[in-house]
Image (cartoon, rainbow, N blue to C red; front, side):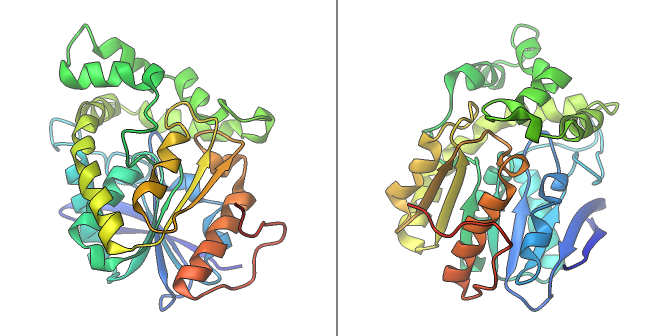
Length: 302
């Protein structure tokens, strides 16, 4: 099993933490995490890829072990997080890579793909939206209201998402057997979100999320014309990004591979080996590096 290295790089004056594993000359895959977690969410997936691929998994600024300047010291937007990620990948010399995106990682990844489509060898989305399809009203209506009119009338509803119960819900909701999910996950995330000043960082990104939506038509055009291979592997019981968000990729991406799995938002916590099997099979076909599958993983499904 390949060793996983834990490194930092100074990007635009900020220390950005990233996990790295696998041969440096192997095809690269970049793993981009969502809210409210960090590259910690990929801790078990990375070793399952690193025998054949060069794996990079950064923590976004304000998350995990990366620097977290106060919101009064840094303007937190998805544009800014994508710019830091782009500079990190340049620093690491990655000029061609597959992207695996989840939740917040999706709008960051779409910006990278739109900026340099020639660098993207494949796109993998795991509960990471790229369409208006899939936004569940019960979850998103409060966030859209806050983004349109931030203030004391709209903030309390979204601030509740920073609480322990709300973070735990993201992990266990829709999982047929919640006992598979370690409490370490939500306790880890809650501790980091609860650091002094981190609430304002998260609120800034909540306000900015609406600015991701205008990117979607540009992404769809890229999928239609760029012929980048696409895998969507999705927890079908996710009430943040519903299955329609996964199925929508088949409208624009040629031969998109879509798998709906009986899980929730953080699918790697309950179905790690299922996801790893689909991912390794997909990467093997599109990057020409099939390799042996981890024990117990499936092949391609319809």
